[in-house]
Image 1 (cartoon, protein in one colour):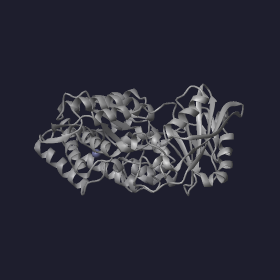
Image 2 (image 1 turned 45 degrees about the horizontal axis):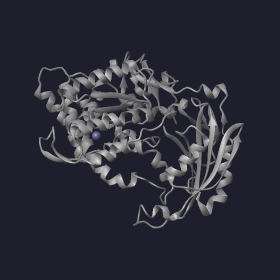
Image 3 (image 1 turned 90 degrees about the vertical axis):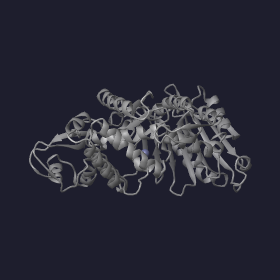
Image 4 (image 1 turned 45 degrees about the vertical axis):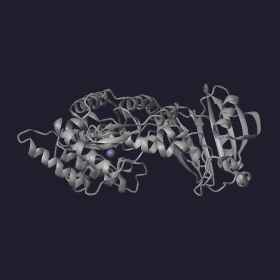
Length: 491
Ligand SMILES: [Zn+2]
């Protein structure tokens, strides 16, 4: 969780709904139904960008930023839409993904940058994302998705599945994880090969990177969504990309296509790898947030999801949910009122109190069963839900806990909710406040052998060898030679 608030896309989306038009696709040259005009696309990008940056945070690295901007602008200029004002940004997320928003906004997570093994792999994905922009896939997709979601998003209330509370807060984020169709993926792969070859990179590497992604999504330890969950794998993807890369080589005989492995690896030396504990971590049934300097208990056996905008905790059976988030309001009373309005709740009781000396406001509220009927006529009437909410003033901000469950189960969950809330306090322990993330470290192999041998010389524990093999785009028995650079991870 970060000290930021997701920008509200709702107005932009509502605006977008009002217009429709037919436009010529810049890549195919065909006319197609497009709800977004080019100006609207640009407006959507411009409006979405602050919310995206706020919810993920920008990964602050001047040389990486300069590199992706330079390559991105160069590629934009040779693309089918050279006049768009492309923007390229690195997001502070361990998720392995890259995506584009209409209008030419292209984002790479630090997670995906860690998995590229050379500039050519980066260029292939850059080309793929720019391809989605130039072929206006995201625009078409936004159009369809917006139509489908409009009813849900506007005035969304608690559904029979109260976990949708989480979705309300995550509307901004979920928009980024819109899925493309396999046809769009194939077209973007083709454009990715073309664009990256045109700026001088060997697109065979793009196929190799898709192989890394496949290994990553098949890795049991990997729970984060990856590129392939938003850019589904077309049939024979690697083979087709490899063949198209081959024809580009044939088309331009004598032209040297670059891979640039060492320069890329040196550039990402020190990149934060995996979850960043400075943004919150769980240890011994406690959640610690060093940046916000706070901690609280996690009920034993409950699962916790720490996303940029909120922390969610739930027992495995899903019968209750706790959400911890920041209120945008300035006072405890206003924050509580905001919740009532946002979720159309009825207040049962409220009282002023303190939590470990911090001013707090307790409120019990209910969501009546019929409230959602107005929204979803077709659906079964759901049982009423009851919430225990706490607004807590700490460090100049208002934090809020929501404990939600069916009204019938409330009495059995209330003690658990209260245990969590009453454990909220300032985090003071230096050891926990100073917890550091792991980083990519680039090492020079000192003697020839297998990749696994090299990992041993750098004291990488055996249980992480498989993970490191994927990270390096190698197999454990791949040969490595003296002087070669490889990635390891260390603090
Ligand atoms: Zn894609």
